[in-house]
Length: 281
Ligand code: PAF
Image (tube, rainbow, N blue to C red; front, side):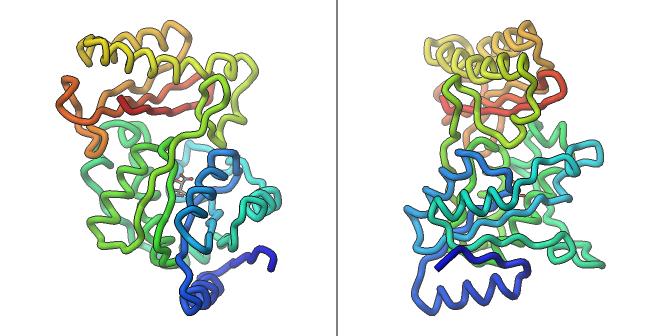
């Protein structure tokens, strides 16, 4: 049978109920479309953990600030459906905005902990309320056994894990490793915004994190290693929003190696494009 496309929650739930009656284990891969190899690796992870795979494709307006790229966000629905089908997917859930946020919609998930760590939240103040609300809705609408998210958006993953635990959402939340281009740049739908020179410089972000990790492992104090990474990126022409060493789960600041599993996170702009990346130490 070909791939199914559900445009509303009722159609999604009918299919999910049929699969449940067949005893299938169900995975959800939430996306905003503009699929690349990173998304397809999430589908692969889903296939290893479930019998049926749902992908949501929904450019969620509530996670974009008015100054951000909601209208310009890359959209390639037909290509996405074909790529998902070729990767072994079963159902695309692609609702209209009014299906997700009908008139009168006022409810939001209120967050603390990793959502207020002073990283993305500092530069995108309403972003995680938008992300958490749509992800909670998707997990309630699709009721999957497992949901897969990329580690590329590391703070987002930490926020979703915390929310799922706090709200007793049943789905297991799984993080999948970042997929990178050969030169180290983390794959992102927004990489299409990079001009030729910016694309050339963009892998420095990952290289700076790698050097920072190596320095910490050599015994350089965490704060100095982080400062050197920030300086190197600034010298290379990036406008750095943050370079940070954080507890891998809570995202609380860490002062020294050995205190906790460390995650290094960076956000920086090159030209008009804002890039984020992270690695474990
Ligand atoms: O990571 C994304 O693509 C989005 O933030 C998500 C999780 C699909 C919610 O809109």
